[in-house]
Length: 75
Picture 1 (cartoon, one colour):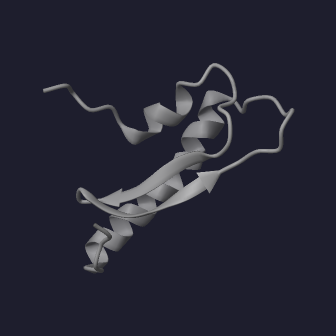
Picture 2 (spheres, one colour):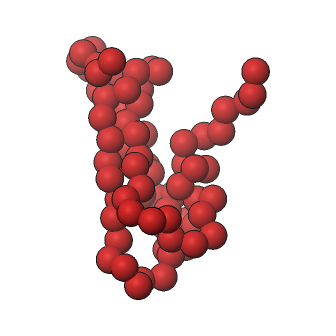
């Protein structure tokens, strides 16, 4: 079994801006609740790694909150 990486590492690995939107999934307790789509204007430089890590934080917080609230999750 391959060790899993933290979700924040997936958004910070880019050397160049990815084509199109970047999906940040909202997951809590292993359940998928939804997603955020990040899309920057073309031609702008790739944000610093720290800024990309900060962009992931709301998805992690939302997932934890939804999981602890006992709301139904998507399949």
